Image (tube, rainbow, N blue to C red; front, side, top):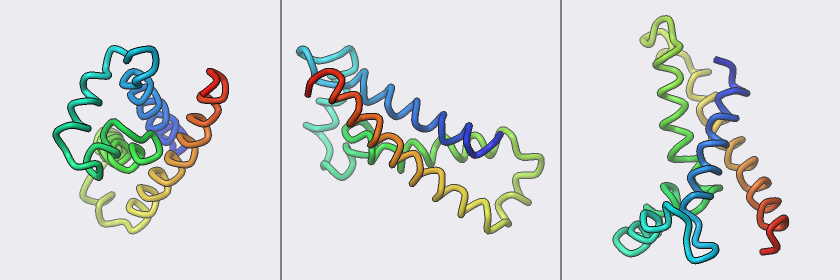
Length: 113
């Protein structure tokens, strides 16, 4: 799978998860999950899992990148021995974080927040 598709997958997952856990209008369907993380975990744990869409790209980007790599790699051992695999991993997470931030700001402007 191409890097562009992987980044798109990470962004869509993170933005979707952030949207369904939002507290707007009394809370969306996933808001109790968000609230649980805020109440029971340190903020540095909660942010990359459900609170901050920019931060979510680090945690969920890592999970998605490695799952995609495992699924599509012909030889996982060969992929793990390449330096470019780790560079692309960082590139995917950082790129997804930037895209998430841009789209979240646009989303907030569209709904008037």
